[in-house]
Amino acid sequence: MNIDGIEIKPGESKQFTINIARLPTRTLIDIPVYVSRALEPGPTILFLAGMHGDEINGIEIIRQILREGYTNLSKGNLICIPILNIYGFINFSRDVPDGKDINRSFPGSERGSLASRVAHTLIKKIIPLIDYGVDFHTGGASKYNFPQIRCKFNNEKNLELAEAFAAPFTINADFRENSLRLEAAELGKSILVYEGGESLRLSEEAIREGVDGARRLMYHLGMMPNSPAARHVTRRIVDTTWLRAESSGIFHCFVKNGSNVTKGQTLGMITDPFGFGDFELDIKATATGHIICVNNVPVINQGDALIHIGIEDDKES
Ligand SMILES: [Zn+2]
Image (cartoon, rainbow, N blue to C red; front, side, top):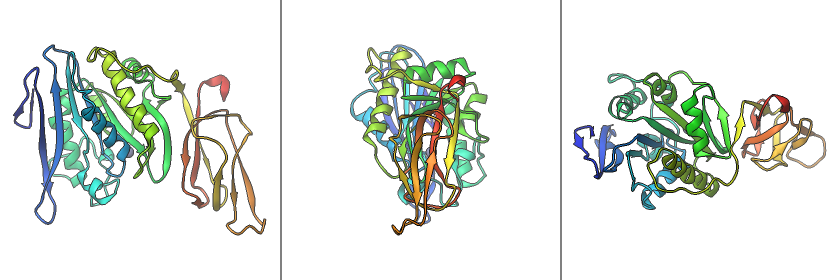
């Protein structure tokens, strides 16, 4: 295997960097890469995090996979990229400095915007080498995603890998234009998106589910001799719906993220901030299902997304 001029032989593991660009102060911006190869041939899997630089749980998931030695493979190859968007990471930002989102910039181009150059590097230097991948994310802007895998249910391999990962929820999610998942699929590579927790905050629950799911996936692919048992049967979510704020105010959530809810159930309340009792508005579930995301921002404006409900199958809607 050769990545950016670095040769990694079967049985070897190597840590190196891929150069992207420089900061205005001339400091080099390098993407750290870790590769582990077993002697026995097998599938090649990519664990990628930090595409959105403020989504730290995925970065910590890959750090723990390396630190705990879950890179000692019985067969196949593992490529780990803990932080793709170094710019966002050091700026506490989702995007690169020009405000562009790398995950809307695929397949990218060598001479395009900064986001598009980062995307291009990944597509040219890494994606051709892999069979499968997991792209680790969190909810954006204080929206806490209960640990979940997003995949395409009509793609058999994608669904098989998602169920092997066995996050609490497996959600059918269409491809987004110019996303890594779409562009990789067009190259015949099956990528799962893991979502767990919220940006700029470590969540022990989301990190544990991510590390254990990654180990289960490698075990399923025959790359590891064992893996931790899933804590639950993963629930297949076929459809999702957002409850949005009908009015501005203070948002109070009464239900636990991940819990089951019934259509019509009161899930929370929007109040004025003053306690005069002038304004109180119940938030009711519009569907029966599971809570898969809660917005942890207390001060909200009309139209803000508050609670995301995942619907398991037709009979529940
Ligand atoms: Zn993200």
